[in-house]
Image 1: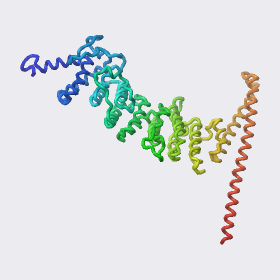
Image 2: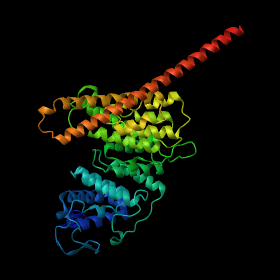
Image 3: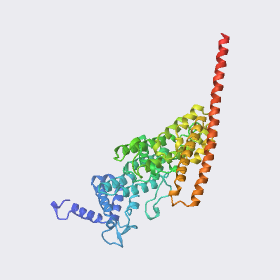
Image 4: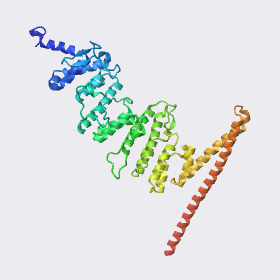
Amino acid sequence: MTDDYGDENLITQTESFLNEVFTTWSDTMNALESCEEVFLDAEELNLISRCIESLAMKACAGPSAYNTFNTGATSANWNGISTPAKPQSSSDNWWYKDVSFLNLHLYKRVIQAMEANGMRPEIISGSIVGYAKKYIPLMNRQSSFNDASHSKTVYTPSEADQRALLEEIVGLLPNRKGIVNTKFLIRLLRSAMVLHVSPSCRENLERRVGAQLDSAHLDDILIPNQGFNSIDTLYDIDCFQRILDYFMTVESASLHNSPCIVEEGVEDGPQSLSSITSVANLVDLFLADVAADVNLELLKFQSIAVGIPDYARPQSDGIYRAIDIFLKSHPWLADCEREQICRLMNVQKLSLDASTHAAQNERLPLRVIVQVLFFEQLRLRTSIAGWFFVSENEDQMSNINEGEVVQARGRMSEMRDRVLELERECEKMRFEIHEVKTKKSWIFFFCRRRRHRRY
């Protein structure tokens, strides 16, 4: 078959034919799909590897490599099947549709070859996302491609096939943060939980979600509990706890390696805390949503709440709202447990509206209410002192007109009234606390006297 026995023998003719086939994207795709029927022989002859390498090089080269010859016309492939001579799109995803019809083992090798040839991770991830949506019904039952335009029909894989496919897809996803949309990753995690994938695959997905938790939304992270029964919570609290722990691990490492860190772990700069503050708001919203579940344990609520440091919460309104809902849904909590959960919030960071609500909240322990009243009184005194300072120097402030001065004096009067009211409430609270302590001491005294009389 070699040229040793004659010019242009079979091997030479085959090479020439293959070189002509590999000239165009469409012919190379048809050649690779045809190898499926004789996979073992094609693999042994190295045809599949050559087809995959040719496709990878053409995809990395761009849409111009789709068809080197006969651009704009219809070309006949080596099987005589008419195929379009150029892609429908001139963007970077022009090859997505064609490779989506490959079987998993071939698709995986094509993606890996493209990655080795320098294809950008965001382009590769776009193809993988489309492939997952197409063959995993739990992800998206509507295919993003026009299936009618291709000769192959799309079938619904079995649960075992979907599980194997999902695990392979997770392994193909680029590892860089932000390359894959967070919403898609969480949907992939939900599907993985339903399909009961391997623990390593699930941990991989949880880590990916945790690394970019700051871009997640509340609806995304409310993952239903797969083993839900009368003693389980409606949502998977443990899963969110692990995701949050992964985020804080990455965030702590980032803070530790950052050159612009001040005391107590707070970064310097306006953009430094945006990520962890966003997650803090997300955690507070999550806790407020799951707090109404009577099966939610106090320790799990606390564990998630303390996962976010105090400096990440500019205000405590969100965590206060979650605590209030939890106390309302768990009226059987002991007083010590109520005080314990209230330590999760910083009463000094409550807004005026939240402080007013907390001061009248009968579900809160008495000690917490007194603290709220005290700090609100302190805040108002500080504000009044500031207004007095402005009033004393108003003659020197020419930019303040008479109307603003009148308004300022009116607000000062309101603040004085509010301070007096708070002082009366605090005094009343102190009296009630003292009365309760006195009553307890007398009860203790009489009980001791009775015991002594018996003996």
